[in-house]
Length: 513
Image (cartoon, rainbow, N blue to C red; front, side):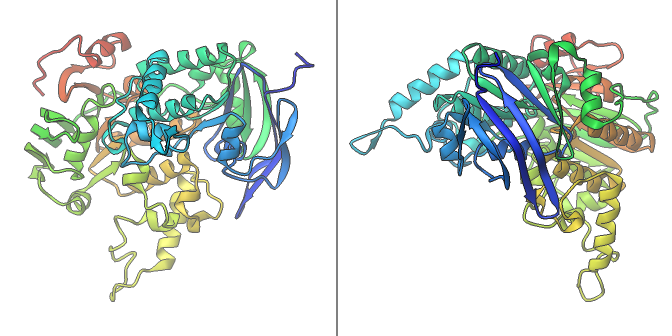
């Protein structure tokens, strides 16, 4: 093994941004045919290191070798020429293009200047069948679920016959079933001789598929371990520098008055004539966490859009603290005490080119604390407010409150949104995939915050694809399937297997609440 050159070797890589050393003298060695996990907290420098390998960034120091030969990767085209492909945490897709057009973009086959779409389509369908990545090649990206967009990104890489595959948080948006399939696909790819670098926060996945794992902490390389010889606790300790509590500690709930009442709610679908949400009714009371569970694409997103005002409803009513808010503006809902941690942090959570401090006051900038008599912003107050939230929620950024949000890691962008929404002291907290892309230490903290909201008498509507999160955080589980609520379960008495049957549509009850 010692004489065989590494498929990829990154030696003494240092990458700096304003105010921060993202990678501080990091060395990473990937063997041919192995699945190598890259683990670290949010902002530890994992995505930056992979972006250096993919040519999106240039390192100030260090060298990259492929098969023992030093290479220069100036841009992603160079990376592709070397057989390196990457699925990014935030997808690089053209929203108004079809799935097929996105997959072939940049490597189009032409004959006499005419695009050979049929051959490309056949190759895409063959790849999607071979790897269990079912997609509709003609669907437009902006109309499909995040899980489907993820599959498109993976097919894009396979279509280019890449042999070094970088997966940046590939399972953050997938359902448990899809995750199992993806992990199997990764094993198959490795068995075919492809070498995989796998960034994830999910220790279970590392234990299930990785051969080795390298850990980064605050930009520095901590070490590389063989997975066969270590435990989840060992990995989390290397990553966070302390022991992490995996179980959510909470007392039984004490539900109070109804805060949110959804009655016969229907929301139109953008991709079919059938409603995405079909006559859904339920209540959320003060002092309880109600979780909407289900496989991605069964109407959960549209349900939240209808409740939060992001989409008009096709029928039914939404009542909040006794008031009909079915057609109320988003600002009115916000001022009445509704907070929303959205599923898509880039589209609905942040203005990416604003500073962190401006994003922190997006829904409150007009309050007297932040705006003076003549409409001028009180910059000092905004700065102080942002600094308090950054400190309290451990939001890591190169330049503190004046950091441009786009420059932050995905996990820290998520923490900023959670800080803003919880600090509004809402009556109702709608949290959609709140821990998506967060590390175990941050997940532990966010779960505590959600439970603290419940214990303070707030109503919490949680939407999650993570079965562990659904089972451990919620007080009541409502399962959605094809736009309807098909089951109401008690997390104390149900099992993941039973929940899986409801999620797959194999079992359903009449839900009266």
